[in-house]
Length: 440
Image (cartoon, rainbow, N blue to C red; front, side, top):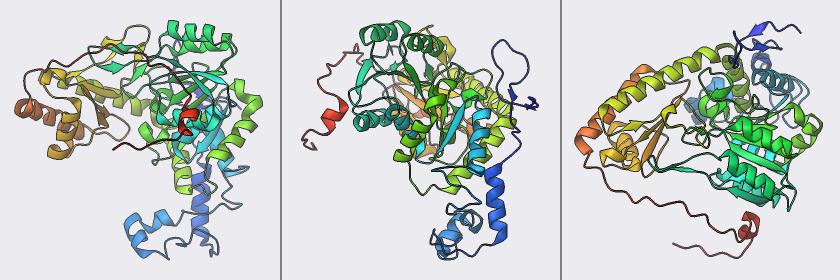
């Protein structure tokens, strides 16, 4: 098919938008659910609320329109376990939009996508190279697969008090010392918005015959924005787990697993593993939110994320003028473990205000009704995404000005410790199945 359907991300060194191969104006799953609703089918299957009629309090709270498409798998709606109809078509459109060879819709969150990547790559006793600062879903996957982690300690930015990505040299060393490892897992980005040199790490891993798995839970927007770090599929990673709900706008718990062309022969096995990890009662509300959001981002994502980056840059400038707060950007990059920065992340260092990031987090929530993503000893993170508006950003800036004036103190001398690499005495699986005692 001719590449007529334009949109998406500007690729480095190219002019104009990336051309899609499929008609991204289509919404096959949304249209199928709309047809289902209009047919007014008499239901003698699950779910038991029967389009909301059996649970009026729930219908009153969520809306009858929502419950009318909370349906069961059937021929006209396809089935996630073995899609052959509208779900398959929606997944194919998503693969095209994200530049992947294959896409699987995930309704158990990116946790299940991460676990599927690792379980489809590692058998019991296989080694996998990964940073220590991984999500708990990775550790859980190590327990389930009984794989052996080869930890690469992340560098630490002592000024900001944050862990970074893996350095290229450390990954190269791990590959040399563990030549039989099955894969390298990369965070892209970290929670703080830090990105490692993924393209170089992919080259090293592939040269050693290892797969590259990317936890891209916080990187959905990399696939559509211009002034953003490289995404997993563009870097030729083998699999990438993305949380479309985090920064893309779909419903919470709806995610995708993307596969590159190197995985073509193993797509069936990956699907088998996914069916081990996912519910057999997939929510059509989650599924249709993936279809609608893919459509929205494919057609409008470039403009949306240009606006989000502009908002974040404006917020950084204003926050840095307050004094005490430091909203860092690419100025903190070091060319290696901090190779690039997610410009939509508003990560703010609070050390010079005399307040911890946790204290600012609590003050914003309790005193100003502003909920940010998290706070730690020296920083807090405000995530900027498709739903942010100028008025909300001004409210955050005003609250931080107020906090600095009313709660700020002399900067505290925080204890800075060099990172000590702990000795690995057993695998996560071994530890999990050992007798344990709960300490209060």
